[in-house]
Image (cartoon, rainbow, N blue to C red; front, side, top):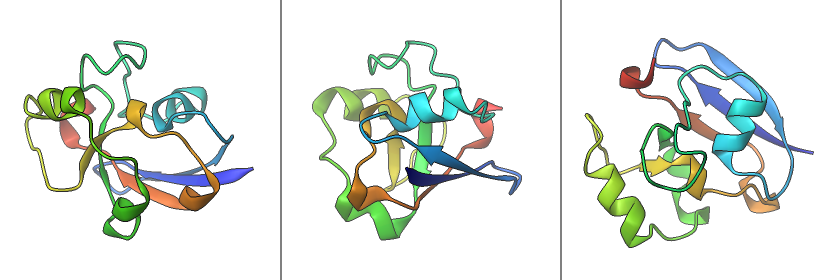
Amino acid sequence: MLQVTFIEHDGTTHQVAAPPERTLMQIALDNGVPGILGDCGGSCSCATCHAYVDARWIDQLPPVSETEVFMLEGVPDPRENSRLCCQIRMQAALDGIVVRLPQEQV
């Protein structure tokens, strides 16, 4: 089993087991991590699974799709490391990934 660390905007940390091929959004929802809503069910159409991926992991992620870029344009505090968790599937290269959750999704 792989590992993911979700860090809430207030610093609360959730280290959770992450099955390969599940998206970060699914993993967060499966583990009751606050701050990941996933209102659209993972179809990249709502941005309620917005997170900031720690710099160490950025180069390991799949490229940002045009749809994801469009959705991220609507988040309140977009950053260079903003991603939608529904677009990131766990794989061995991401074991230990750290993502920080924005305050607006509380």
